[in-house]
Amino acid sequence: MFPAIFEEFLGLNLFGYISFRVAAAAITAFAFALWWGAPVIRWLRAHKIGEDVTKTDSADLAKHGEASGKKGTPTMGGSFLIGSLLASVLLWARLDNIHVVLGILLTAGFASVGFVDDYKKLTVHKSKGLSASAKMLGLSVVMLSVVGALVFYAHYSGRETLLTLYPPFLKNSAIELGAWGIGGILLFVGFQYFVIVGSSNAVNITDGLDGLAAGCTLICGLALLIFCYVTGRPDWTSYLGIPHVKAASEMAVVGGALCGACLGFLWYNAFPAKVFMGDSGSLPLGGLLAWMAVVAKQELVLPLIAFVFVAELMSSWIQRLYFKYSGGKRVFTVAPIHHGLQLYGAILELPAEVKQSRAAQRWHEVTVTTRLWIVCALCATASLALLKVR
Image (cartoon, rainbow, N blue to C red; front, side, top):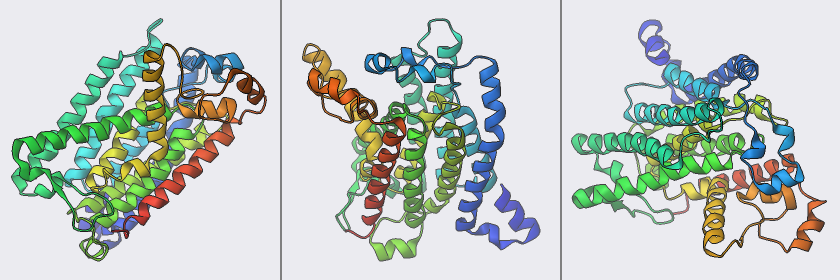
């Protein structure tokens, strides 16, 4: 909105530069998050909208008293995080860009599902929020609507490359699903379902320590911002030998807003947290990260960019399945893995006597969060190296 106004009426070409608007979107989102965060937290606290984490975390956390200090901390902080992000995008991004519009719809849709889940969990007595099937149904409807719109646009605009997957490491290699007919389109939609909904749930599961999910999202968002910007530049893509996606650079503005909003949220969510993110923040953040990867044609690189999120999600799935089919045995000390590191400084399951001795030397929450940030930063940096490794 702002760029068009300034260019048309004030003749300020500066606002036409994507690099300037990326920075402006980040600063604006950060300012909005700081501005709205304090009154939202006061309102949540006044209305006692706080989650009893001792009921949601593992038995190991409750046994060691790690969750007791967080009891009563307001949640649903994702409301002002996502609000700041979307407000900044509406101000600084071009709303005639299909990638931006669909990204806004995906983020708002996932945020709505998360908000309903949080609100029901916190206001209905003894409610655990939306059931797993209801939550997945909501995410699925939003995701299929957005990806369906992308498929429709790609087909009727003749941009079949939007439905193409590009494997990393291989130069001039592409899986042109759009050219495979209905079967190829169904494969594309199914794959993107796994990417987007899986990413959304991965961030949701990672949101268990103060600052962990927001900090990792900030790092991944910065890497994907660069991918989107480069992918939209025909000169850079030609030099690097990576796919060019017309108008993908505009998604870098969305990435800037994402990073700024996460920074503003971290102001309140850093240890000791004054507010938790909740599903209303974690679900849309994961979905938006995945959407940026879809636009930049980096879906196959996303597991490296978001390695911490993937590890958290997989540890939870593996633990649950192994526990069910092994008669109560476990692979990891605690799942997701950040709690295992927090309690025992270890990921894999330990003998009982070793656990007891290690529990006295468990990692502090800040140590776990900082070290996972470091791992996330290293993986995101490694993913950027793939721009040239082909």
